[in-house]
Length: 318
Image (cartoon, rainbow, N blue to C red; front, side, top):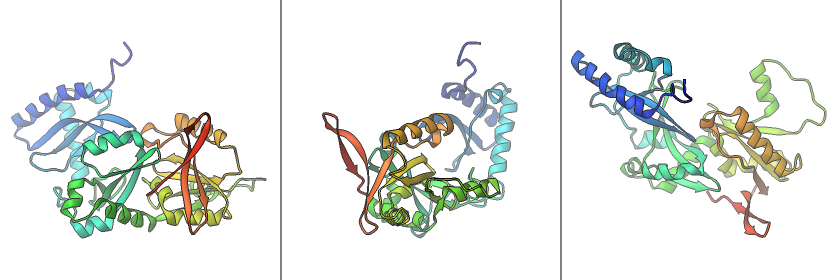
């Protein structure tokens, strides 16, 4: 078999879409299938969107090569089963949040800066910060829809903000306050002990490492731009410089800047990203620096923009 011959591609899904919808029409079913591409941070994945004709809500299904080898009827039955499981017990499936619900559940989401272009094309609010871009989402409690539990994330658009009477800067400020209210700052040792269910032996000269995320540990890396969190970290590290390592889009690690030279830190981040972090969860290979005082924290990164081998410190202005 040639390399890539058995891959699931958008073109293959589009061919099956026609056959599947034709079969649905013959069966008199309201369900419809649409081939689409789901963008997850740095990764685009071919998917089937499955929904009721005329309703805006769809669930996404990512077919495997084994799924694609099924007959049209077998594949259709599998997709219909997944749709039924995901939407069972849901009373309202075609909805957008009202102003108060939007304000209460706005959350920031940070990604690599390469995502800025498609976010703007999709009419999504975004704010470029250093080599990252922040956008917005709104969590809505709809049991059975979300892959993460009982919260479905609605991707916030510029038009939704206008309908709700929210300016973009105002919406970002609200989102940051919301995620700050569920922030978790924990020694990485404590997190590991919770995961393992046992105490770890004390290590000599063990560096102080702090992991920061939200309660759900989902899309929590945006907290690195929180002045409140920055101030707390500077207090924790004795008001000395802190390196911030983006372990994924979901969290970041803070460590004393005296622990290791920054170039070695960058190499460590690159290696971990390449070998241990799923592509869709990767943020950047950069290491960021937090300096200043708890009253006036400064967050930024070094850049070679100075020319002739000189580095310039770029600060993030949220």
